Image (tube, rainbow, N blue to C red; front, top):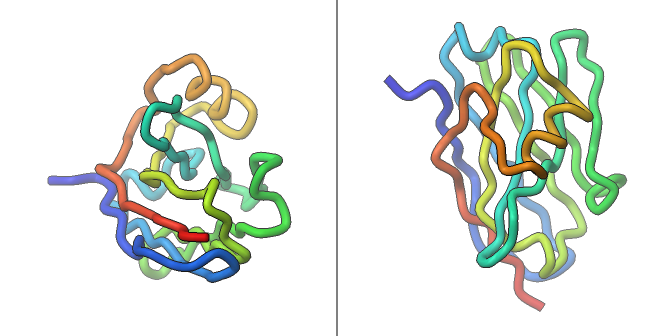
Length: 129
């Protein structure tokens, strides 16, 4: 049984919007931390946003003011609202959950090419200029 299933990716023009969804198992959804990361071809994985069990959020500098992470507890679903999309946002976007590590540590793990406890299979986002 897959723990995390992403949806909502697609192709948009620069300036457009997309909303990504991540359906989680109840166990995974109740992790201390949930978040999104992305990986573009030929580039390393990059943390995008995290949200902890208290609802505190963190964002990568590159998406601050444009992306919003949120959760729907009734649906065990994580979201990423992406506005003012840029061609540099083109990447495979992954949902992830961790039982202990969040925010800065979550981002650091990705920079070091480490693994988050649970990772989805990804959804492609393509932004054209």
